Length: 250
Image 1 (cartoon, rainbow, N blue to C red):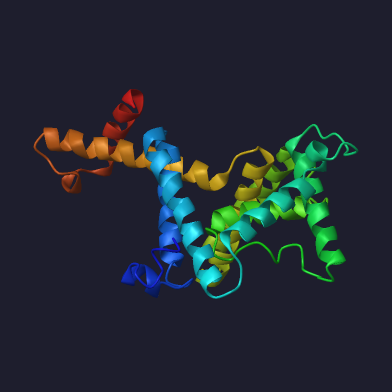
Image 2: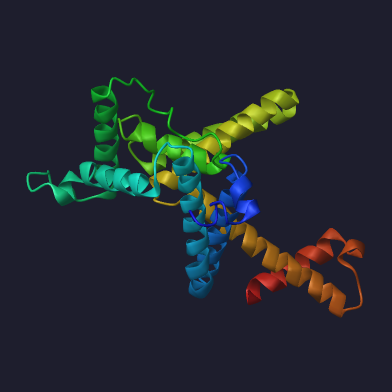
């Protein structure tokens, strides 16, 4: 990477900045996720390499500017993992049995690190605003749950969802667009937290649901095409009939 950005390297690589690479980092991240969702390990092997390359590229730009090297980044991560996993690396560490205990300990250690460093960051300050909204809702719930601000059981989140559905129904019949949007947001936030309580990553679950629906509806289109018809000319009843038939086969 240093050679690519060196005096005799690549003009394109030399002109890149942290800001110009943002889109590439995002693209490579989504390509990794796509390979995971498809279960394509051959593709995943290459996509992981591409994503790692973007990290090296970012670190090299920072090294060129005199901030830090890729080795500094890796050492920082190694140190963080050791500090925040005392149940693994510290012989005197308290044994942990559940993922929830690990998350809680992680957040407590992180908070102490910030206090020791003289930092007073809010618990949710570190949740990136650039995350997809559903994934960010999941992460927000995880962070506050680590300090005990959470529903005791998933059943109570279901009750909350039913409450939000009722509020959305009322807003849809009596109030304006802004209020309806607010209630829809509250409902989606509650659903993201139910996923968290059930141990489900909601962004991944929704991607799979999108893919399932796309596959089924595409098959509905193909069935109409095989009959010499277009889905655009079909009635709702006809489409639902084909949809039900497709669900039995896919």
